[in-house]
Image (tube, rainbow, N blue to C red; front, side, top):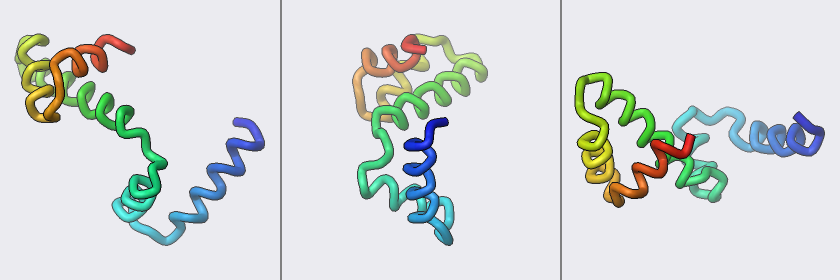
Length: 83
């Protein structure tokens, strides 16, 4: 990690010092410091792993995830195959 990155992380660490994990996430979210698309992709991938592990076919799992996240099948498909 570079010096600049370390300074940025130090700033964030100080900003959330003393907060619970939920409070820290809320603080960062409210200030636009969390990438919404990255969170959506992470949720989609975790759900895909869970649903397919439980035996659901991949296409059906992507349909289910798209419905739950109120987005298109194509968006979920892009998240899953963009690794």
